Structures are given as C-alpha cells and as structure tokens.
Amino acid sequence: GENVGLHLPTLSVQEGDNSIINCAYSNSASDYFIWYKQESGKGPQFIIDIRSNMDKRQGQRVTVLLNKTVKHLSLQIAATQPGDSAVYFCAENKNKLIFGTGTRLQVFP
Amino acid sequence: ETGVTQSPTHLIKTRGQQVTLRCSSQSGHNTVSWYQQALGQGPQFIFQYYREEENGRGNFPPRFSGLQFPNYSSELNVNALELDDSALYLCASSLVRGESYGYTFGSGTRLTVV
Figure 1 (cartoon, rainbow over the protein chains, first blue to last red):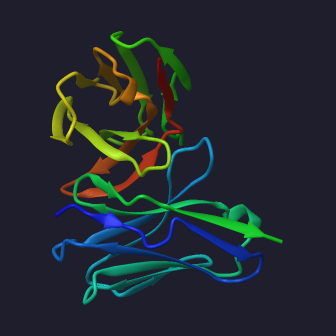
Figure 2: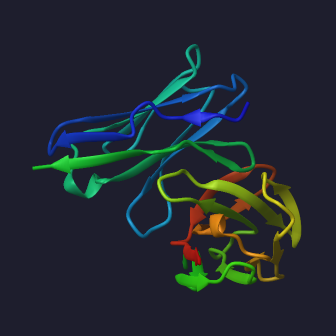
C-alpha cells in the first residue's frame, strides 16, 4: 500500500558530525524516491532523488542509499551545519508525491 | 526563472465559509499539484492538474476543488470549511513529459478555520 514512513521523529547532532536520516517504504514496486528539506515557514525543497535502478547517489554533502531488499532508504549529510536544521521528508514519486511523516534534524554547536 | 508563488500567505476563515487559494507555477512547468500539510505531518496529496484537467486525486472530499488556467496557474477552492481543514496548503509545479521531472514547491498558504 501507500506507506512511506520514518524511524525517528527527531535527530540531534553536533555541528560537524555526519547525520543519517532513515526511511522505510512498503510497496516493493516503488521505483523513484525523493528527499526534501523543509525549513520553518517554507515549502519542501528538493535535496536529492534516486531511482530503483541505483543503490546509491551522491550530491553536495549528501548521499542517498536505497536498499530494495529491505525497502529502506537513507539520507546521509556530511559535516552537518546549523543551516541543515530542518524537517526532512522522504517521498515516493508515483505521478504524485507520497510523503512520510518527517524527521526533525537539530544541529547543536 | 521565477519559482512557485502562493497567495495569500495566511488566512483565517470561519467554519462553513468558502476559501480560494492561488498559485503561480514556475516558468516552464505545465503541471500543478496541491498538498495539505497538517501540523507535524507530511504533506498529503489533494489533486493534480495538467492541461487544465484534473489528473489524479487523493483522498479528499468533493468540497475540495480546483482549476488550472491556460498560463498554468491554479486555484484551490474549499467549500463548507471544517475545523480540520486548518493546515498549510502547498502548491507544487512540475514539468511532465511522459513522467514528472521534479516538483518545485511554493511556501504555502497557512489556513486557520475557527
């Protein structure tokens, strides 16, 4: 069914450390995922996407890993900065976006 | 290149009233989607418009309706407002050529129903 969910509602990390945000999905036919960042008072902002023919994709300071065997994806943020503080959503793209609940990332000095 | 703009940014309405929210698409995009985001939740898909026709709908009652105009801008109309309609309403535009090529979101309209 349509179920994209997250393991942790809040993640607190120290500035400079790496962050890992996890997401599980239930539909084995899902083939296109997107990570979004949403800052307070703003709409979701595209971070990175991945299709099911890949298991890893890298961007600037971010990496998305997709494990189709266990239906799990993760977003890794390297050298986390205060500006990374936001709510992060994974979403499945099936001609509409199916969002999970979100994980709040808090970065402390 | 302009992004997605939504108006108004905030709105307070009384239960039973009707509301119209507006969205201007990003330049070059031909599809508009609307999402409802309750506090502390992820956005929920309401519907999508492509070539001025509804092209997909989520689990929302008929009192949620929309329009897309020839310039690809869009309106979301909600009739008979209920308290549970209080949420952030997000508009997202995208370019569809067979499949979607990413969505650009506006900052949303915060609707409060009292």
